[in-house]
Length: 137
Image 1 (cartoon, rainbow, N blue to C red):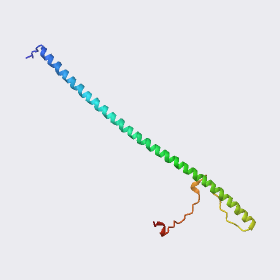
Image 2 (image 1 turned 60 degrees about the horizontal axis):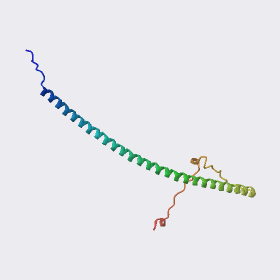
Image 3 (image 1 turned 135 degrees about the vertical axis):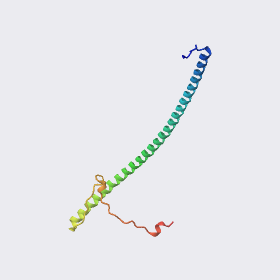
Image 4 (image 1 turned 90 degrees about the horizontal axis):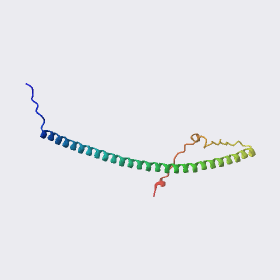
């Protein structure tokens, strides 16, 4: 037996249009909500990244300042090392003169060049001495 098809009535067509319109409205509403959530997420991410960025700038500024301070201190130490090396050379020349005049052999240490190989400068190990009264207030 064949199914009898009847022509779609106007009310059926109107009902489908109304359902489709409601479905489209709901879909558009969900889409707007989704877009709003994506926008909020992006705004939050931008805010977090800006906070991270400012923290990194602050760390860079602190590190730059510390670097400048250390560079300044190193320059002072280099100048002092050069001055002390020159004074040692002067004292060694006096020792050479004393050695020549007196005829006695004087142990004259070699002067290391602290600016060329600072890691090879001989550093004698000296004990640290503390007195009991050093810690009294």
